[in-house]
Image 1 (tube, rainbow, N blue to C red):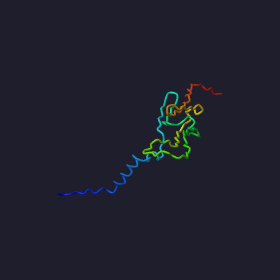
Image 2: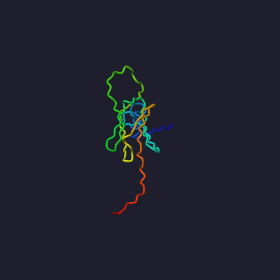
Image 3: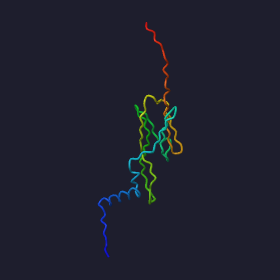
Length: 140
């Protein structure tokens, strides 16, 4: 009877360790992850919707600096003793900051935000296009 020995390529243990970390540890949650965002253009505005469950309205900081609209959440460091031993822990709310460029065709004075059912929706109205009327100019 002939026995075959299969040699494992050198990269396989490293790959398996990475996959093990990905599925068993907080690896995915320790990366710099941002909440998912959808941007919808409507007739009169743009709606920027971020999926951010588990937060409160007061947790968000929305600011406008030059042409940058920023939506941020800063997680306060909590010092607490855990009395439970987690077998698996995936719930994690991390600090984030998402920045969007706005231009002069948007009405930045009337930006609004609503947080409901884990979705933060920022509405950025468009400025009305002023129709240029034909005009005759007399030469003096």
